[in-house]
Structure formats: structure tokens, C-alpha cells
Length: 190
Ligand code: 5GP
Image (tube, rainbow, N blue to C red; front, side):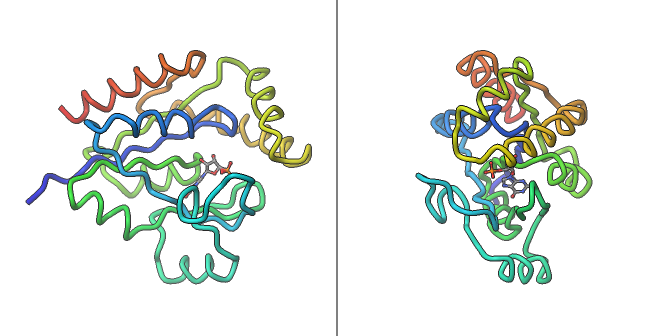
């Protein structure tokens, strides 16, 4: 039977560059990473694809999945629901692949409580400083000012939880941050 894969949780405030870090990590085929596509009730942003970036669903569908126990974790983030599908993650882990989740802190805490340390690696990505984070959020130009404000407030609360993760990595230089995370994952995989 294949060895059970490693569950890797990556968190960090909106705009910190988690998505880019994750995409670059996934380019390294040796790591055998499977990305778990989350479910969300938020609207699709320009350029996003259903089933690739997220499974975009309505509130009723999301509620039904919660009631059926379909999520490994789920949370409400700035007025929208987000959840990690249980079945896909478990199937990939059982098949021996390593699964990467890019989720916010409440969801990560649920996973830390549920999953033993043995098969779990948690990494928090930090911005170099608050101004850089604000500039990235505004520069992204995908949300209106109210949403940016809410995301920045949430970021402040999230940064306080970085200490709960196995590793905290500052994303001041993208390729350096990716290299560091790649080595952390490789050394956990042995
Ligand atoms: P965004 O709307 O910018 O795509 O995501 C907002 C936040 O929700 C980000 O911090 C992202 O990592 C997080 N997120 C995405 N999918 C999930 C999920 O399935 N569960 C949880 N808890 N957070 C998620």
C-alpha cells in the first residue's frame, strides 16, 4: 500500500502572495503536490476558472455540503464561505500524494485540532511589512475599498496567529521564500 501523503497547510494574509508561492511549489514535480480546490460562495474574479481556482457554489449548496459533513474544515471569511472538501483530500492522501491547502487561519486551526502532527506540516507566510501588504492588496485591484479594508483588518488578526504554525516564512523575495519552503517540505518527506 502507498505511504500516506503529507498534508501541507499554507496560510497568510490576503495579498501576501500565497497563491504564487503555491503555484511555484507545484512546478516541482518531485514534491508530488496535489492542490485541493476549495469551495467558496464568493463571486468569481476576472481570470478565475470554476473548478480550477475554486468550486464556485451558492449558499444553499455550501450549506448542504456542511450538513452532509463534506468539509474537512470550513469558515466564513469577509462575508463569504470557504471550505476544503474532505473526500478529495483524503483520497489523494491515501493514494500517497502530498496535498497542499491554501487556507486562512480559522480553517488551519480546525485542521491542527483534527489531524495529528505526524502527517501535517503548517506554514505561515508573512509580508515584509504592513505597507507592502497594503500596496499588494490595493494593487491587485480586484476588490472595492470596503473589502480591502475588511481584508486588512482580518490580516492584522491573522498575523497574530502566525506563531501557531510549524514555520513562519517572510515573503520579501519570492524565489527565496519558495526555495525555503521547498526545502522544508523536502526534508519532511525525507
Ligand atoms: P480569496 O477570496 O482571496 O480567494 O480567499 C480569501 C481567503 O480564504 C484566503 O486567505 C484563502 O487562503 C482562504 N481560503 C481559500 N479557500 C479556503 C478554504 O477552503 N478554507 C479556508 N478556511 N480558507 C480558505
